[in-house]
Length: 511
Image (cartoon, rainbow, N blue to C red; front, top):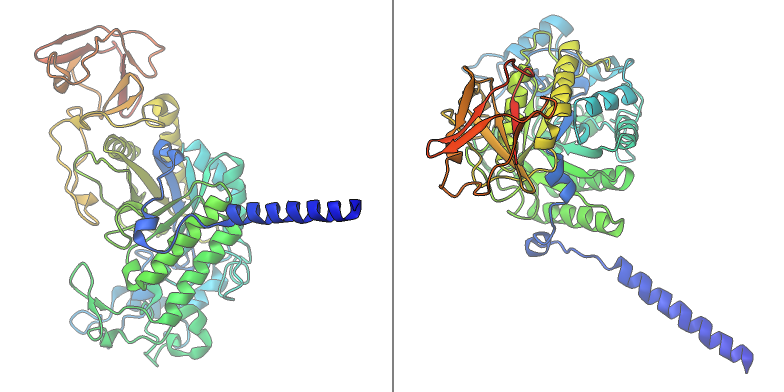
């Protein structure tokens, strides 16, 4: 009888455990947009505001013009993309420097991508000192070369080139420093990226199809296909095999590195919609199972609105938004990868950009440009460290803040649109941006005002903005000293300290 009793108890416990495990493993999301829209943007992302990533791969070796080298090096005079029947500058440079494309193709840069000076801990230290709250590498650019230890391809950084798991090393070091780890993904561009149909190049050799992608003739893109958003070229929807590869590589990244963010470049809309939904379902459920809060991003309309975070490229919003968004931009005006003649943005420009974006409910993902050997150029380091010094003083007006009723005031106007940042002029002392934290309002002036005082006109008395009585105003970095002020029908006029404090945007803490 006692034996039967314990058998019953055992069966009951097992059934409860089975039921419990089933409940735990029950997926929260399904592969449809309505379900995926239920995913909430985590607080860590709303608080973080600033992240860093890097374009670094075999395309860093030639150091010529930009990261599109992998594509434009193949545009000879017979290529459908040749303008006026003339080969690209990249092609001319490549043949003159390395030889013809049947003898030296993109694959031949991989052994030259040695990364002998790459130090993941050193990189992560720099990101942390710069004030970044999330960081990571480009996992795979449009060139088909994976920067992780992949079981799906031999064309990866663990087996070739550096012969190191770049993503694995960075993920450990970044997380050691209490930053979120991100993976950025461009593989969708690979479809038709290389001239796999051109028998005068190495890209047509089936032996290298694992790198160069499937045989897709760009000359045939007009059917079946559609124009891209610039209206100047055509591209087809990817086939099932490519769609599956795209999805499986993403799943491998999620399984191996559990990134806190998966960021996508544009052109994801060439991937079948079911595959796009399946990725989000897989990623969100994987995170939910591990009690991890994650973010995915998209450009244009590549995912359904509300299912992930909208990301802009070299662009920003002209007005404050009621949804969180991201913008990615490079520290170099002309390139996303290291080149011989870089044109770096000033620290002042980078900080003003960050402040403006944050005031409008956005966050910044700043790209940097390591050399092929793994060194980060000194001018890049200098700018990042200067940003970090600014954030040490002014970070309380950035991290963990939320938007004010208005984003700010000033005469400068933002031009919106894809790749529009070069159309936006530098800011001046006329430009003021607002953020809030609880009952505190921060007014960040984007240059030092002339004279002994300045006025914030939008905070005039009686207009309903920040109606509480102001008891103190301090300049961050000013040793907590209260500044004299007057608030009337003209605005809030603040008396400046006798000497300028700081080098860049100046934060006035209003309480």
